[in-house]
Image (tube, rainbow, N blue to C red):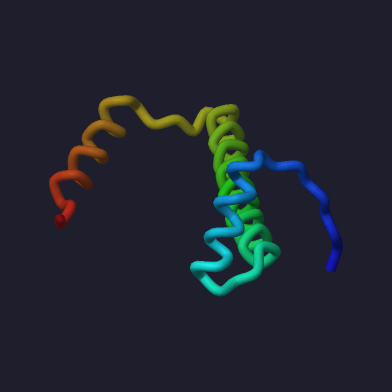
Length: 80
């Protein structure tokens, strides 16, 4: 396991300290967990964008009206 030093705003540090106390977790645990979640989300998003660009470059596009119909269908079938 490695070590990383970062500078954060005083307000952010205070919030982190309060959350650590409230959750009975260490600040390190909370920061590591938050960073892992951030990386997973952004890696997934970037890969999705790259995949979509490759598909578009290959001419695999969906017409606008088909996208609208698909979205309307999903919204109509959504259960609250």
